[in-house]
Image (cartoon, rainbow, N blue to C red):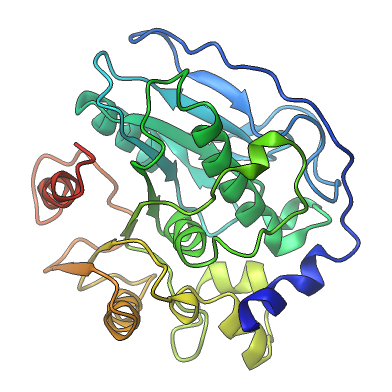
Length: 313
């Protein structure tokens, strides 16, 4: 009953008519990534910015008018897929630093990667803080709906998120039910539950004393009550239905206190959910993928081992 109450206030008043969807034509391996819209019309609730996304000199993305997926297809798909979400405190997305390198890394190993361009709550969306979760749930359903076109096994679909993107993918893993928006079409008959969740230097909790993050400020404001902070904390939603979880961050992370991954591990253990946590000796926050030296250079090897254990690579 608690889970049903969780989103009731946010869904109330959001309406959508029945719409048709169109089949995707996958790009061939080696071509530029496809950009595929998540919704066949305006996202639930409407609102938001207009025009093209804003791209910073550092490759971060904001001003998201059309939530979408960037698709990175391997030359030899192994049937597995991962939905990837960059961080940026729900104010922007570190696409060039986090999400796209991860997508290329996955594609090199046979995994079809879908980089999520999710709505940012502060950009005028009527759904507010619920908007990114709506996009994540829709993306998971959409990938499964098109699994034949992309040569995918719909039971081998994981999520990978960094920082605030780790928070979002954590919500996707722990709040797959109830739906965060009314069903629109046949796509929404598919499951929004991922089969695995890899959370890299994630923001997990919005509760004191670890509530200093931009994620907390954007989602629940400067002075939230305890109920709001609990509602939007990832660890409070862990149940026996949560998929296996991979957690990794550095011991000297100045943004997401290492207690975040510790709290998530404890919540998984209480719910008998398979989880493993890797705490690097140093590396700070936002180290992404692709470093060639230092304590964060080899962490993707641990992720690869975990994925092999789940038949994702």
